[in-house]
Image (cartoon, rainbow, N blue to C red; front, top):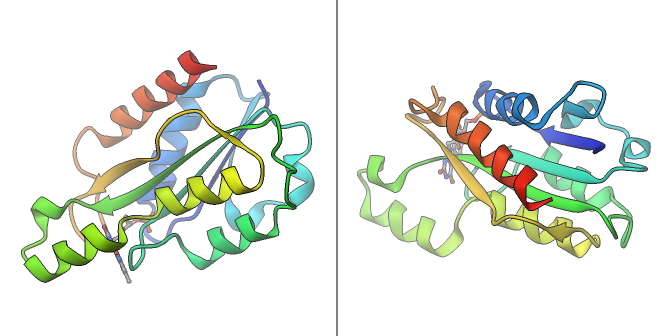
Length: 159
Ligand SMILES: Cc1cc2nc3c(=O)[nH]c(=O)nc-3n(C[C@H](O)[C@H](O)[C@H](O)COP(=O)(O)O)c2cc1C
């Protein structure tokens, strides 16, 4: 199954999750894991599955991820399975009630990514997922790459 995992990452945490997903999904000929700045739209031709992931930055995906998603032509993901993930800080680790209210209101990056992929015609095959960092710049919480690998296995089961 021709699969592309597209990610952005400032401190390397989302990259690690993307790679864990890519490694769990299958062989190198079929599965490519690429940073969003290295993607050309032609690489979407013939895809069967695309997974897009971003760090959550001020409740949203990064600009580079949003620019990439906005550039995908309408309906060009028809027949393509899509999934979305982000990295984020857990509300249990945030000592601010105000910030937690904002998080409840504005959420994380994965949902708007999933919405955008569906808008371009993609079929969402699994709910958007978040993977946790311990602090603003990471590292990832223990066990998160393994959880990402399991999430990828769940995607395979749904296909
Ligand atoms: C400027 C900035 C804004 C952030 N905003 C949020 C946020 O709104 N919600 C959240 O859960 N984490 C937020 N974080 C934490 C990031 O999600 C964290 O840096 C990211 O998961 C790390 O991924 P990366 O190493 O791939 O960049 C923010 C971090 C920075 C530096």
